[in-house]
Length: 176
Image 1 (tube, rainbow, N blue to C red):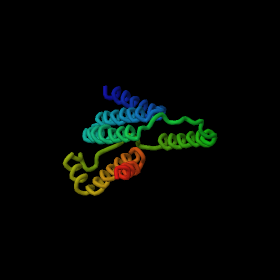
Image 2 (image 1 turned 120 degrees about the vertical axis):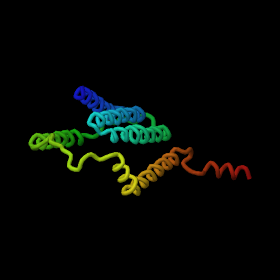
Image 3 (image 1 turned 30 degrees about the vertical axis):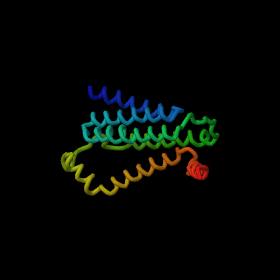
Image 4 (image 1 turned 90 degrees about the horizontal axis):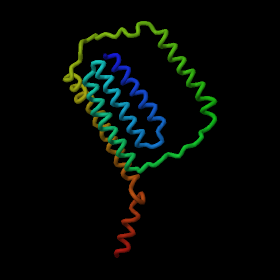
């Protein structure tokens, strides 16, 4: 049963990722990314990483995707213009992609001992994980939240009508 669920949600994850790339509307792409993030959470759950699954849903599928959707809607992004692209990606990109996939397949197939994972120090508890996150990694955690706040403020500033204070000045000058 676990294998069937794993294959099913791995297929959802791949389908969401492919749909993300093929969508022309940014909101649909963000919704496809939510499908990918939620499918990854289920995969983590099936692998026995309950904390990672909960963090995946809360942080990525919840907060970050709401932020992405909010910024996309705030910027009022419409349909993107489709271009035919250049011929360079066909001439160079396709053979390079095939070569990279070939190298990755060769490395994976020639590797010994795949699937022999083991625990060295025992199981880490949620208490140990939270101690590391909120004690040793508190500064990077807070810096990330400040960077996200700056990104939101930048999106609001870009989305404002007139992109500046020209209108309030005109109103003040006209009122005097």
